[in-house]
Each structure stands twice: as C-alpha cells, then as structure tokens.
Length: 497
Image (cartoon, rainbow, N blue to C red):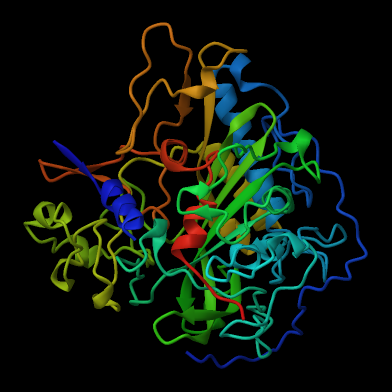
C-alpha cells in the first residue's frame, strides 16, 4: 500500500526582520520607458556535447522533434535546453526593461537584477478580489505597482551583495499548501516563493480576457467556448514561447552568504498582519516551464542549490552544512514516522526528524528534514560542464545544478499521442491507455525539487518512501494546458489598492 502526500496537497487546495546593510546599491525600479527592443531568441538547443555556451538570449526551442530521437538523445537535448534557458534567465537584465537581457553584460561575481527578476509577478495581472480590476489595460512594460499593503517593492537600503527585488514576495507555502504547511531551513526560517510569467504568456492571458474578474476560478477560465492553448515559440509575440517560473528563497540573516547564493533584498508580505518585512533572500530552487515547438507538453526544468540536501547515498564523513538536512537529526529518527506521515493532519514538532513530512504551520521555527529518494536524474556531465564554465567566470550560478528536465516522447510520431501518457503516475493519474492507443512517455519518470515539492512523495507501509509523481503528470492531470497559474492566483492573493 502506498499513500501519496499529493492527495492531501490537492484536496487542501480544492477545499480551500529588519536587515542592516552596507555597500548600498542604487535601486532600479522597472519603468514603462524601455527603449530597447526584445532581441530575437538564440538558435534552438542541440546537445551541448563539448561546450557550455553562456548566451544572454534564451534558445528559441529545441532543434529537432524528439519523437524521432532515442530517449537518450532527447534527454540530452532537453537538458541542454534547460541549462541554456537557466543561463539566459539569470543574465543581468537591461536596466528599466522587462524580460530583456543586457547583452553587453557578463556573468561574474557581481549580483545584478536578472531577466527573471523582471518577469511579471502574477499579482500584477490578476486581482481576483477586485471586481473593478481591468486586466486588459495592463501593459507588459508597466512598472510594478506600489499600491498594495507594502507600497513600492523597491528596498532603498539594499546592499550591492543583495540588490532589491522588484516585486513583493507573498507566498510562503509550497505546491499550493496555503494554511496547511511550510518548509523551513535548519535555522527555522520559512522558505518563500514567487510565481512569474514571461511576456508571451502574459499577452496570451491578457488579450483573451483570462485575467478579468469573475472570468476564472481555481479550475481556470470560466469560458466554455475558448480552450486555453498557450503559444509555443513560433506562434508567440516575442518568438520565445510561453514560460512560467517558480522561485524558492531562504531567508538569510545577513548578506555574508551571498558569495554562494543568488541574493536579493525583498519585501516579504505577511498575510496575518497585512504587513511587510525587509529580508535578504538566497535562491534555493527554481522551476522553469517553457512551451516550445516540438514539445506541446512543455519542457519542465528544475534547479536547486547544491547545499539544499545531500545526495541519496550520503557518506558518513560528509560534513557539509546542508540548509534542509541535519546529520544529527538523521541519527535520531522517531520510530513511528510512517503513522505520522499518513495521518490526516500535519505533524507536530516532536517529529521534525521524520523525513519529508508535512509540518504544522503552528510550529514555525521547527526545521524540515528533506532528503532525496532517488539519484539526481540529470546527466552528471551536463551539470559539471555548465558549473565549470560558471566557476571560471566566478559566478554564483556555479552553485546550482539541474535536478531534471522532463519532457514527452510520443510512441507514434505524427499522431494524437500527446493526448494520453503511456505511463501515468501519481495520485491523480489517468487510466492506462488501451491497447493500440497512441500515447507519450514522460522522461524521466520522476522529477522532484526538494524545496518546492518536498512533500510530493509516497509513504510505503514498510516505512520507506518513494517517488510516484512527476511535473508533467501533476500539471496535466489537474492544470489548464499544463498551467497552475489560475490555481496559484486564487490560492495566494496580494491585493492592490
């Protein structure tokens, strides 16, 4: 018998410090006066066989239909695409512009606002509690609003080691677990999250009226005549295709750790008291989903910081100070973790040493014990190649690795195989395809980001844990064209005046 945490996650949804800084940087609020045009994308990704290119422009897509490749070749192409996108999205942004890289800049030890920092936060387009909200009037180039409880998102006293973020951070629960649980690091600090979209996804939603008040719900747009079909690169406004991102951040005590993290100073909104605190944040996780030609089920890439959790085969002499794992805790695991893990409610503080289990929000300050259940599916040589090039440039990006890039390979090219997975998995799986039915296979079968999907595991009756879900299965079983945007904006709300 296997009981999946994913069930509790989705049912919970449906039922539903001041910092002292030095070396100040000049804040650069986004403005509606950008004079730089969006450059065309880089050529489609191939295999990254011998070099790790550092390109400020994201690849247009993938150079060949993976349906006609071996799964090994397809996987390498997808991981090359994932890394090239990661580099481009973390490239310094053109000052005052949104989604445009500064092509004259270089990746180095300097912390600068990146392209992904300038994408639209979902609250800029969606205001579900404001019946008078006019989403169609919002322009991509509009500056980030300053009319919410926290005022301007720009932190004036941000240090050069942690430049000011240009959006309010207001999500504190992973995977839409609002009011249910959080993830905390070994210092007891709660991980916070952002969800953003690129210009192509923004324009599609805005132009189709999918962000107008009362035009959507948790289940997506209310229209019964218009089917959501986000544009891939060939049909998009900019030529890049739709992209959705989710970032996960640790709260740091100061900027002394910013030599190994992508760091930002941000205003973090606390819904309980409707107020914001200014915090220094270190990036610990990043989801990137892009819809491009030859991949109608999107490409799902996820990255983590190297010090989040140990490898699945951690050695006894590993003395790394992990952010979400304690060696001493691993040696004192309670005997009844399984019964606690499968209980109807999250665990109490006495069970913080149980791995990968939901913890009550009431026990904020109790760290989570997060572990890996399978080896990292991404190719080791791909990670090492890109990390090596980034290290040569002295970039903090060298401290991140690709966990995996998931994609769909149809069993019969040129058919409707993308309508059904051949190997459905997870708590919300669809029925197995009947004999002779065209279908697609998800490669790799399981991908899990520990700090974004830490609880998305199965607890086995023998006391062990396993992975039974995946990005694609979850998003395509319950999402709208694979997207959880509407679920996200209904579940986590930051109101503008």
